[in-house]
Length: 370
Ligand SMILES: Cc1cc2nc3c(=O)[nH]c(=O)nc-3n(C[C@H](O)[C@H](O)[C@H](O)COP(=O)(O)OP(=O)(O)OC[C@H]3O[C@@H](n4cnc5c(N)ncnc54)[C@H](O)[C@@H]3O)c2cc1C
Image 1 (cartoon, rainbow, N blue to C red):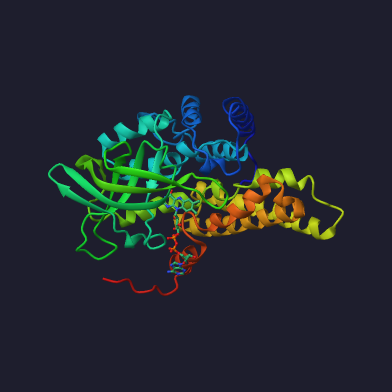
Image 2 (cartoon, rainbow, N blue to C red; image 1 turned 90 degrees about the horizontal axis):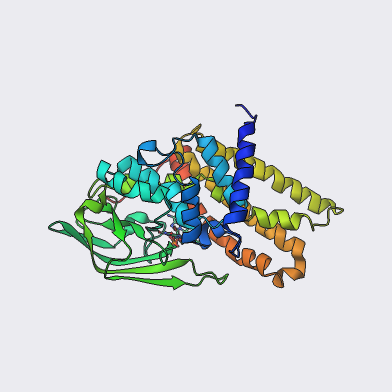
């Protein structure tokens, strides 16, 4: 392994920092903006600057950039607290699955507008009775002639209120066993029959939503990949969702701002800070191994579990440094109540440990219903 960091990427980092300062000058940035602060204006600015879909083929508007260049831009944007969330889902997972499973027409239709920052996307996976168990989804899409008719409900759909498109996981054949009979559709969020209600979380943010589909018509050619057999595609999407830098640095700015105020004459505080700094380094290596594809993609479960449990330790440290003033600092209090979500979103820690047991360690699998 070569630990030398290419010098030109330091210049790129400076360039990205300059971009964030200028493009977000009129915005009041919050911690976790990468997820909770969708901004179509910032999205478009990222597109103009060439920061979306950098790794994708030039034929669709990408730049064929190498993984380290893309990583540097993304890490810098997140550490600077940029409100990337409208572009983040397509860059992280929807673009890659469209490129892998979409038809040429579908790629030509959706990828260039993503790259330009002209569309924002939400992920319609979780339902009230199917979160960890994706195979339990009930939202139904029935094919009538040349269109699907969608009925059902999704929940915890981040950014649905701002999204132009929903990447929807739905059931197209209820007669088949749970892991079969599922399909993936791209749904226009302005379609008649869609109702979006924002949900306010414990921190007061309302970025995630419940989404109702009531006889929503979706053209047949919006089906991505295989009809009635998309479970593998969905699992691939989740692998893209789990191993990235977003899982490590959500509250790093908060940490850095409070580390300066910590009482470093106290050896216990110094010890905790040493542990935190060490874990940032380990976490970054885990992310880089995923990003550079030096390990099997299933290891994203290990990266996400390590990194998000660590983010909760960071929140707790910052709360301890602030002491009783934590309750007076909106920023610290907000992170303390928001931090439990780190190990829930994108698959809970318990579920990821199950996957690690079965697919990384090769332990016996729980039999699936047939
Ligand atoms: C901030 C945030 C943003 C989100 N954004 C989106 C989004 O954009 N799109 C989307 O589709 N979803 C989104 N989600 C939903 C998220 O994916 C689900 O919350 C998550 O998968 C867990 O599902 P659940 O909430 O239904 O919990 P459940 O599945 O009901 O689980 C409840 C508890 O039981 C445990 N559990 C369940 N099954 C098992 C098992 N077999 N073995 C051991 N333990 C188990 C879980 O670990 C958990 O602790 C978001 C969630 C959060 C917090």
